[in-house]
Length: 112
Image (cartoon, rainbow, N blue to C red; front, side, top):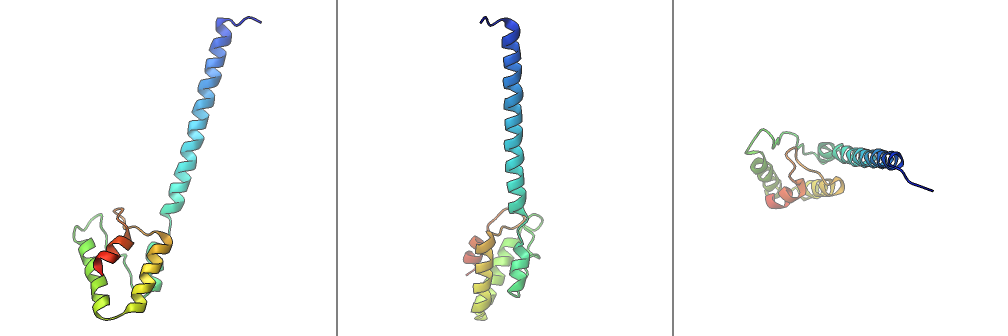
């Protein structure tokens, strides 16, 4: 069996097509996983606890994180421990993030 130039070209084309298809499938898989993780009910979970964090938009308000932390500190001063526990559990369960990407649980603890 002899291998000629046209066989090499066909193999190279097959290899490039297969590699491109595999990269496409990997990209689609990663994109769908990221989309699933971004559709978490972050503010809905906290609204169950009687506290809505949707007013703290970190993408457009530079003071939003400070205000969120102050709100958490206010709940602590009012001794609303059940509500604070509920909020921490909700943020922990869904790994909630602010719209700017910051972890809600981290800022929750800073507020405490």
